[in-house]
Length: 305
Image (cartoon, rainbow, N blue to C red; front, side, top):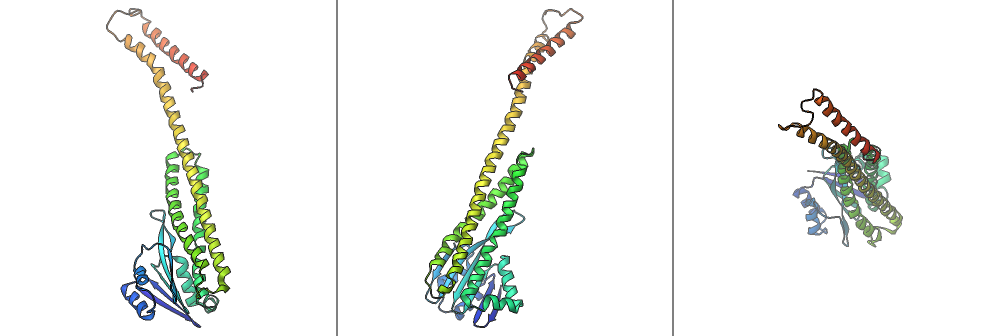
């Protein structure tokens, strides 16, 4: 859809948004050493995270989350990165804000270009990855904040609303966990590579990148355990409240049983005691009230109410 070029000193950054077959053909003509299978992967949005190493370039496929406010779910967005001699190529769908912001800042600010592109393509490559990885933490902190708010509401009376919120957060955490955990082995492989394009001078930078990804993984793993515990707590509270309702309904049913029996007996069209007594209604009603009160007292003594 759009291809943007940025040149600073001897570093060239090509940023392709929504790649088309024409964009791939341009890459093929400019970089004939890129394997055709990697070029095919660029047009696919369902590639698994991976690192392909060639003598002349590195091809990296990573996924990062992007928040969908309508579905309240983090969706996986793919970014492909090619590192060649003096060249970085990024291919994505234009929804990853940190990547867009970084390119725009480098495009508009000379100082930023010098800082991020003045030390070689491998450093620019690292900065791009660092921006994408660091963007995980605001998302994870927001999820953690939602979980803390849910912890305060879980003992409230609206169990149905709490269970719905737990379900939504749990779905989002599961998605984030799947996205983050898939990136870890790829970045670990990048950290250990001996490819000449990734100079030893930047080994500590890539180590730091992997450490950040490990922190993000630990963060989301902890959130997964917390949400699972909250879901279990909510289920327990819901079951307890259902049991309380059933207990009250059972007490009412048992209390009404003898009263229903008495009223049914005295509703029969047969000779019964006190049927000709003018105070029979008062006597029967009083008897029913006394029975009900005695049963309620008994239930209270037994701790059933």
